[in-house]
Image 1 (cartoon, rainbow, N blue to C red):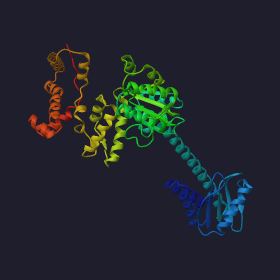
Image 2 (tube, rainbow, N blue to C red; image 1 turned 135 degrees about the vertical axis):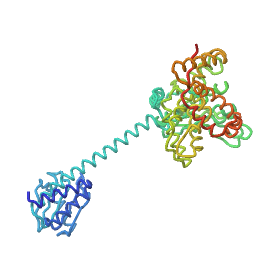
Image 3 (cartoon, rainbow, N blue to C red; image 1 turned 90 degrees about the vertical axis):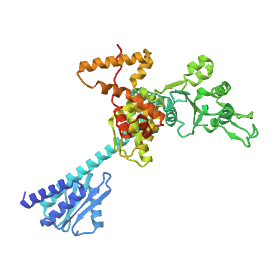
Image 4 (cartoon, rainbow, N blue to C red; image 1 turned 30 degrees about the vertical axis):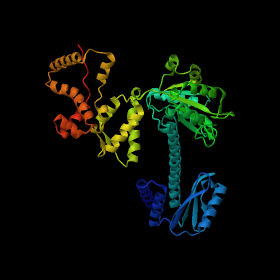
Length: 501
């Protein structure tokens, strides 16, 4: 290969490495070829896979018009060209491809055959690589979108975050039952997300385009609940100035969610049983029967089997509701989810409060995971919202945590469950165990270890008496506020275990 062509190849390759995008690479190669006197002008007309023109990359003054170039490209596409160049008056057109698959056409003016072939071969490689990368990128984008939709549908629908196996099994069961028309009973403690599970069932059911109506059965008296569920006619009672549709009618074609179903009165249980059996209602004060097409999802934090045994809940209604039973585990049984829930709530409340939290101290996360969360996810959410609002900077530290979270001692809870001896005897046993342990270790840290263990209870009492006002609590304790803050941070260290002789 002549030296000018080798120099052109080396320079074009360097330009390609510096900027691997197709357009700048082609322009650089055409400029280099023109500067070396190998051609007067050139343009690359790239084609899509369907044969339509994608773009024109041109340099120099062409010998013919753009319309003539387009007509030439159409001719080459029609003939297939077989890779052979088409020669004209001062110009040569090189099909970049073979047979019917043409990536583009290179047209060069007043160029030697060696330069034209070199640029054609080079541009063909670049066009093929560019198309491959575009296809690969499109496939990756589609795959990423598909995976995101799958993850969203399975684990994060309506802000449901599930990492623990127990809760993931609940979600899988909810997805399975969603396609049916079966009545579902959701059981779980307050704040575990029963309504979110009910909404997930609705959104993945054939009724997803219908209404989703919620009713808190425990928040209304029997009279109000009857009117709320079944509606009333004008004059049915004082204040009924017009006919009113009830929640069951409003949910026609969709789903009704009966929250706290265990709180309804015996008389209301009878009416609900008839509705579930016959799928028809009568408005309060009316004799007309109205047919329904409603899917029922009920929820309770009570153990209805025990309520049936006590006689406070009808057995026939329980069996009618309990076609499919879903048990949501409390947050203390799914601690793997806590870091992910914290991250989610931080994102939500930082956005709402125009805050930016850059770091969460490890001991903060340890304290959040250690705490049993009797109020479950609702309590955790409220806690995160509070500490985001109160955070003075970009880091969450232990002094922002509620005292109940920071001072929680799992070993103390274990003592309560196992019914150990009196406080004094347990205290003496603990002191003896810690003393022997310090002797065996040969460390002189006995005082600090005991102080860390018991000082938390004094601070908890002082802060509780002062409504969590640290300045007042420090004054009550006879220490400075800075000392109190320092000691509170130390309280998040892992607790010392009970050792009873």
